[in-house]
Length: 224
Image (cartoon, rainbow, N blue to C red):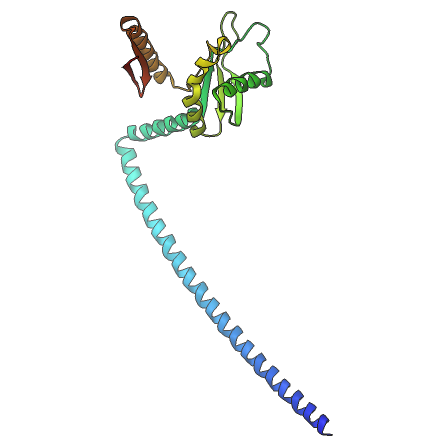
């Protein structure tokens, strides 16, 4: 009997504990729901505030842009031109051009794999063979000339690393003696670089006792 009474008391106590726990859980749920509701309200207020601020700023910007467009359309064209120039520069910065690779008759329609293998051979000689996005000849095939090869890499920093090692080709023997790697320059940059090359050749002829190099848009001379 005593055992049954103790068991009954235990069950009653357990039931009370469960009820208390259930009430506590309900209370916590209510508090959590209320907190969530307050948080949602606060987020909505903040979002509305941000939206109003954005609308105000956009309205002000649109008003200024409209006035500028009405008074003078040239700046807009200048901006478009500048954006285009930056985009083209960014694309070119990921390219390097390989000159002097033999392009004999019969290779007019050579597949990219053949050209890629030739470029890989050159890059192995300079000691740096990065992954290449694409490799292709530039222009149409002409008898007696070697079309340049455009090599597109995955970053401008990789191109920089290749160009820094390019002078090692001079130590590659006869096979690489006429091959050189250059940056992918715009028409204006090619013209400016051509003038520097002509200046360098003139100095070599006039001052054979010195070493002449092109660096940072200038021809520099040093004692050998």
